[in-house]
Amino acid sequence: MNKKIIFLACAMGIIALISISIASAGSDVDTSDWVNITVYNTNFQIPPEHGGGSDSGGNYVKTNVFTFGLVALEDDKSLKHNYGYESTLDENYDAEEMEIDGHHAVAYYSHRSICEHDVTYLYFESNKTIYALSYDGNDVNDTIKKIVSYSPKSKFSKEKFDKKLNKMQEDYIEEQKEYEEDYAYDRGYNNGYTQGSINSRNNHDDYFAYYMFYRLGRRSR
Image 1 (tube, rainbow, N blue to C red):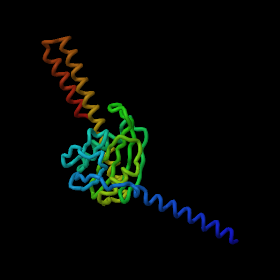
Image 2 (cartoon, one colour; image 1 turned 90 degrees about the horizontal axis):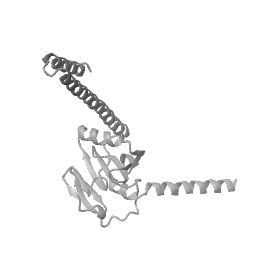
Image 3 (cartoon, one colour; image 1 turned 60 degrees about the vertical axis):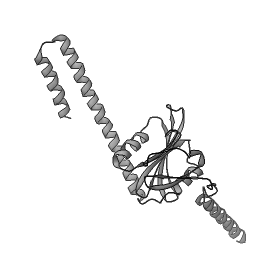
Image 4 (tube, rainbow, N blue to C red; image 1 turned 90 degrees about the vertical axis):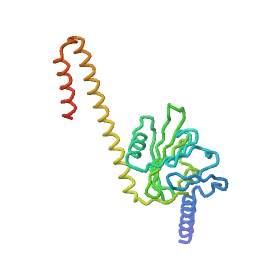
């Protein structure tokens, strides 16, 4: 019986140590020389190697967004276009949800042909604003987590955060479908008009028929 008690005590001790280790992840990152930046009225701290970038108030970029960027997606339009595009990108090879020191977050990992290296886009919410932290890398390491943890905590619930991102992704996909339909109609009209001009350059009725077919087709969508 005593041996069982000792075994259970040891097991519980190991579990406690693991929990402490996980909870303090990133606490050993030296931030004494980190740089202060402000993005959309929110203060952040970043490693010195990412300092000296361009700051336009709503975003911060060092070299380019595939090297290091922090962008505030302050309205539905910017969130839809940024998150919608990145979350549906063909070059994505993995995605991961996580909680970072009071922040709901989701990461997308991709290998980008435009820059020929891996890029991570980490979306997180801070003080009712969703930010996109992008950088050259294929993981969310302790340094990246520390950048997020320095910002104000999430105001959204996990359910609201997920619902917001899902809605923006759905709206983006629907918008792209509409663009494709418009392009198809435009191309069909142009091709039809060209062919009609060849067959009957001086026939006004042909042009009018092609035009009406095009307009009615668009209106019936």
